[in-house]
Length: 243
View 1: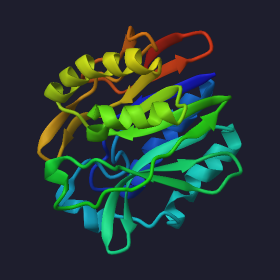
View 2: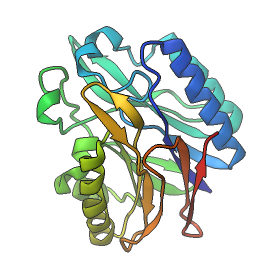
View 3: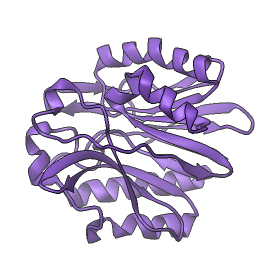
View 4: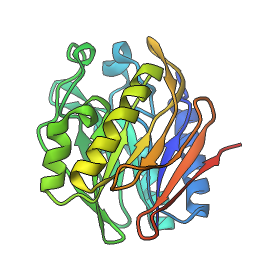
């Protein structure tokens, strides 16, 4: 059973093109036997704080239904990064599509200082199960907060899914932090970062997998679009570069 992190370059300025790119990646992941696929933070729109209100969607937006169809067809859980409306505010969310199940949303609970003027935080943790494994989503800044990982471990999470938009400096901090999370909680960590420019900085890739004892099992490069695949049953991981 493969859990797959998609390291992709944001498609800025065209939602239609971005949806098509995501669906292409879904098809490639399906060919690798993915049971669960997740994308970087705000993957569908790109990480652009000043555009959040203009780009935000409601959770039930019909334009996202293509991902439910893909989930049903491939029997795959899919999580994409989307700014979503919450009352009159906007949240940084992962929208989850699971085979033959209702659409779910998870909103980032710990916001970075620069995000607080544009977004409101979520107020609930989330676990979902795939292939008998309990997976916990964490979105960028909150994945660097020990309290968040502790809360997920307390709920019984076995794999920590870090959906991020990180610069080179942020990736280096992750390389120090995620092994500690893995060792402390005996919980594997899988990170999906973007590559290329977003608003204000350049995402530096480095998506990877850390085993439950803190060893790095694989890591993607800083520039290539790639799929990072982790099989929790065998403990094996690999990077597949996307053409």
